[in-house]
Amino acid sequence: MHHSRHEKMYGDIKLYTGTASPELTAKVAEYLGVSVCGRDVVSFPNDNLFVKLHSSVRGQDCYVIQTTSAPVHRNLMELLIMIQTLRLDSAARITAVIPYLCYARSDKKDQPRVPITARLVADMIEVAGADRYITLDLHAGQIQGFFTIPGDVLTAFHILLDYLNSIKHRMHSPVVVTADLGFAKKGRNFAAGINAPMAFIEKRRVANDAKAEALTIIGDVRDRDCVLVDDEIDTGGTMVQAVNLLKDFGARNIFMVFVHPVFSANAVQRLAALPVTEYITTDSIALSPERRAPFGDRLKILSVSPLLGEVILRANQGRSVGEMFNE
Image (cartoon, rainbow, N blue to C red):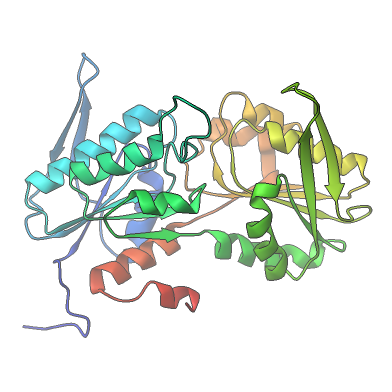
């Protein structure tokens, strides 16, 4: 019997997808040279979900790729039910691959009488039967501590950085800008990665009025191209303010860079209307053609599939993931 150099501990890779991530899963499957496993996901008339696998996964190394963007509760339940289905079919190991993790902003009690929902979501994933998890760019690093199962928290930072470096020659004395001070540390890594200076937008509440905000820019943006970075864009409100402020301060072209295109409510319309040269994001959340259309050719979607594919391959073979990033 032929043994590969890396002895598989958990059988072959079996790749499953929820209904939220079929295109991304197809790309990961292509990277791995495997096919996506068949399954039925049925929504009954009473709104209950039902999952059935097309073939046995007994003794196999299973990966469920499912992003938990809107519709959040359907996507999350689908993920949990698929994990449990694999568990009950005696999978050797189950890894939940969640490109975008829902409830990541509910990571602490920042006021009385509120939940820490990110912890609840982590518990649910474990109770459903996941042995491991893989996710991308968590809104807060401490969420890793809410899981007791091991996981790989990856970043799309390198993918975005490689692209920025490939278009840097088109930029006029670029400066990296973060839209809020909370993202400043990660923004610094971006600035170092493209060898550019930094600027920060500071938001300050005026008096006690929640709506009244004073915005200032720390750093120099006049007559420079700005690379505006953040981890996710939700309603787009912060970015609208940031772009308008940068223009007021004499910025030239603006490149908006972010990992997760959450795009809630009317974010697509608000963002597409801005004087932005290019919007650079990833496929951690699928964007329908209708949602992409308003941006025209200004939207650049970089795929996280090679990153997820390589990590899945290394996990299956019991090899280091850190080596990928020279860590």
